[in-house]
Image (cartoon, rainbow, N blue to C red; front, side, top):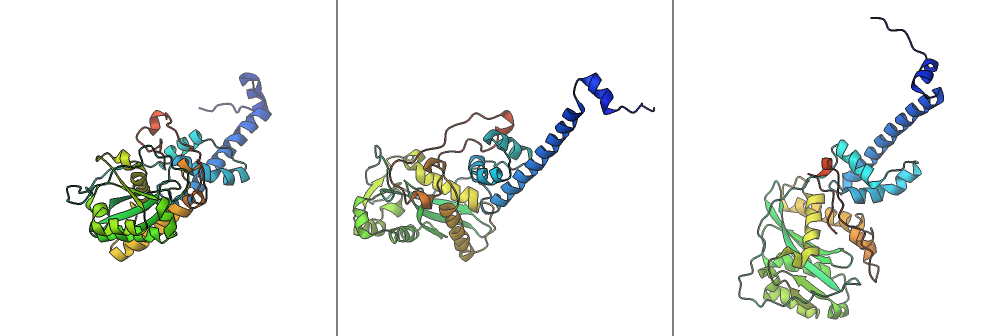
Length: 305
């Protein structure tokens, strides 16, 4: 069937809009499509170094570049765009026991229950986590500054032997003057690695106060747990590793990106290295958000980091 051709002028009268409005509409549609493509390309570029970075941090890092290109994009719109393009991050959980507290060594009391942390090198938190690789299950020891979230020391090994946790602590202590140790608290769980004589002796040599959790509740060492999760899930989970030597190189790169490139919502969106140069209370820019149904199975409401 042949339909008569309709002119834009005829549509103006029937549909109640002008020819100018018609063309402006399609120009806006084309501009929106081009803007979305630009955003997706910028996200993919950032994700090359930070493959598991959450949406809110992506939004903060992209704001300046998008402004230069004249693109206005709110946080919620970015989440919807990420969801539509399969770029949101799913949460995956696997657990391995890394803490054995049924040992003969002294267990220290928790000194940080009411502590207000307002400067770097006031409180360090330590923990061990696992890393499933193509080679085998490896174990990562981290020492993190509670104020700046900067990773001060790290080590990866094939076993849970205390010497590896001690190596991470030794690296951390190399960053400070021994006099600073007198005003520093080291907090950990009650695992054998942190209670053994070698580890305690190293802390004592710097006059560092020792604090430990009282139960197995992860919330008693939440900052250390969070640092573990970021390093593993955002920087290591996607890496193919076939030897311990390769794992050390990959971990070193991950810690560099974490310390120098990744902003933290709980540090006023500063990267840890910047926050480590500050003093006083850092603004927390995180809170829980209710998201649309399409986002329910994704990591949108990021935890404080």
